[in-house]
Length: 316
Ligand SMILES: Cc1cc2nc3c(=O)[nH]c(=O)nc-3n(C[C@H](O)[C@H](O)[C@H](O)COP(=O)(O)OP(=O)(O)OC[C@H]3O[C@@H](n4cnc5c(N)ncnc54)[C@H](O)[C@@H]3O)c2cc1C
Image 1 (spheres, rainbow, N blue to C red):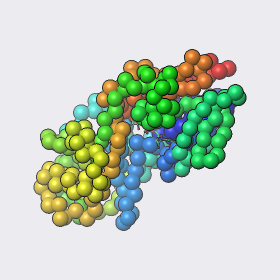
Image 2 (cartoon, rainbow, N blue to C red):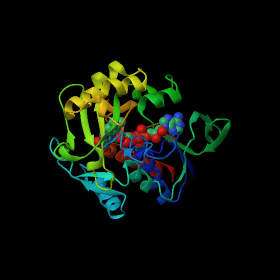
Image 3 (cartoon, rainbow, N blue to C red):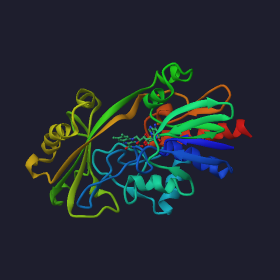
Image 4 (cartoon, rainbow, N blue to C red):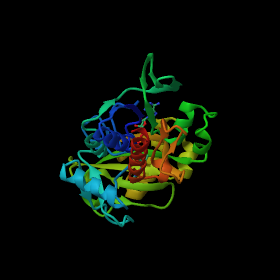
């Protein structure tokens, strides 16, 4: 059986791993330049990097905790003690050398085709035809693991599965990546949840395995600020967010050596589906993602594995 998975974030990779382990032929398509989706690392000129999506991963359940342990033993994750302001009850882990390193570990042994934007997914006699540019390929099963609004855009609002997907709400997150000279006085501000328009500030180089002598900060705007400024130009967003970060750090915007913004249009589910996945009646098309169960990497992992389990149970 050939299975197409659209999306090489943690949901798609979780699903692919289980299907490949069961002997199925799996191809994962992703429009990005690499794997990981929102487990993302941005490299800047000058050789430094920012984890501008998820800042860390942690487990609430035993299956994901076991995966984190496995990846830690393989050198793809390291434990991180974020410091004051952290609310996680369970240990935090970060990817090595960046968050996307965790996704690359999960993608080992899987046929992943990056730079492949799926334009259409159509039912044909022999199964499903997925199209990338002017190339199309047919598969027996198809699994879509995109953020919920992107699934609706791909399938069309009238698709029978989209009625349920449209109840899911995802919030945006505008993100600032900023570099300053020097480390010194910020040892106690590795990770903070400041009042105001910012939700989270992370000192990236307080994470294990990161090098360099710059302060590398990532600031996430809260949902209200992100919604208000969502469609502004990225340089304007960076100019708006830099003073917010500087207020918190007690620095001047002019001191920033680097300040670049990123727009996560669909960052985290504010109203998840409440089911591990959706499928059509025949069990031939599956929809999964973090948005099914929550808004964390663990939710995506759990959804992806649930898709694989159902597909294997029905398909064999
Ligand atoms: C700013 C931010 C902070 C976060 N913080 C945390 C945190 O601290 N801890 C935590 O656990 N989680 C956090 N999260 C959430 C976590 O990143 C997500 O829950 C998880 O990564 C979602 O994985 P996914 O595979 O479901 O989706 P994604 O990672 O979004 O993967 C979907 C993939 O589909 C691809 N795609 C989209 N359209 C197409 C198409 N047409 N064709 C081909 N490919 C396509 C995309 O390129 C993407 O790679 C954060 C997210 C953001 C944005």
